[in-house]
Length: 400
Image 1 (tube, rainbow, N blue to C red):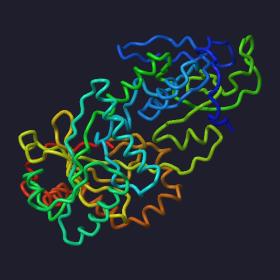
Image 2: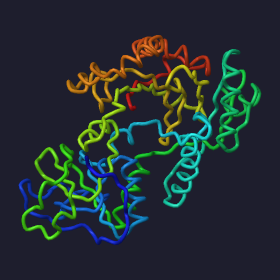
Image 3: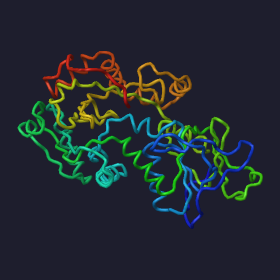
Image 4: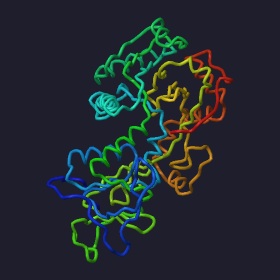
């Protein structure tokens, strides 16, 4: 098993030069914000992060700022950074209201929201603190809404208010509801832009980012590479699909939808295994975007692991309506008919899917129905904004 990242002590210098071996040094491309690339001249690092999404880049940035003497590299399988989940999400800066009080999720979400605003202000990254309403449209939803409000207070979410119909109209003139939670500090941002800024910070601090390096194997070296000056100082060997390799002392995996497979490559358990779901959004016509000012969410049903269809403003001025949640046949497939045989086989043999389907069967059927029939989704959206019609929908896009 590959050793865990357990010690980051004394200075170890910068990345070490390439070495000849059975596979040879990596010749991946060093990523640059200015475009283009050049062959990597290093093949060993103190720490390697697998995955160039926002989690991997944030981890790399934090490590190098805390331990500037270490040599740290990021490996990304694509030609560019942050193009999957980081670049395929609604862009909402959540406030932390949904999570169990005193849980790590709750603490990190509340702290993270404050930190992302602070970071964006420091870097000049655009965002909109447009707020969010969680709206009860049925009488039976009000007890759940009030319980969610109490949870948000326990989590320390700033500025929460329970508001009635007249105040809902003041915040969202076209929205209908019996009662709502007003979350004024919820916002929106382009997370890919944030991730690329993390990458720039990391590189400016001396870190290296190698793109087009798809990890195929992670193993402990059996012997020192010939003519290597570093001996067994870098005992972990990371190989890519081209037969190239990188050596390091520690490895941190942040592989997104492939995190279970990369975990298994490192000698750890693949559990919990990934079951991919895709979220389809509807796009509101530009001339109808006046209907929505901020985020409008339904009251979540705790029986199901999704927040429901909602109204989401975007940094480019568009309004997204959605998402649904439908089973995907490819882990990084963003279109309805994207297919990968291995991913499908993993879905079939994954016992977690059977449990998930059995617990959420009626919800799943309803989601599939709405995915197939636009009118069903629009009818649901009309519970919140009655003025929306099918003719107001410009297109369907899959982003999550």
